Image (cartoon, rainbow, N blue to C red; front, top):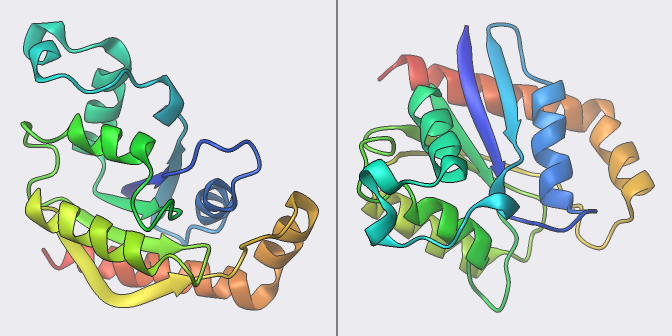
Length: 177
């Protein structure tokens, strides 16, 4: 059983990125377990002075979750042509640790307009030595949709199949490493 951690880069209560990570967990194919991380908003601001024995418990939970996962999926909105601060903060907590080194990672998208954030996030993750899976992309256009419509879109058979297929392809990438 592969254990995959899905992280939404959004803190919004009605986040389409968070809805996508939850839907990925609900549509994981056989042999994969996807867990949606929900601690982004509880992370303190990264400070290198707070590493080691001083690592805050909330940061330790994230670090342990990434370390123990076989792979990581990130769904990220774009704010002002960049990666949201909360997600960047979470990634910063992984900088000086081995959690990210050679960790398979895949980016998924809930908006076709997040091109700048996609590029920036991919660059950040490559710099941190994540093994970024870029062979196939999952994009389900949810931008501007209200929660009931988001649920309906994510429940469509074609989108459920797309999610399972993307996770299956990512799982094959993880197993090949």
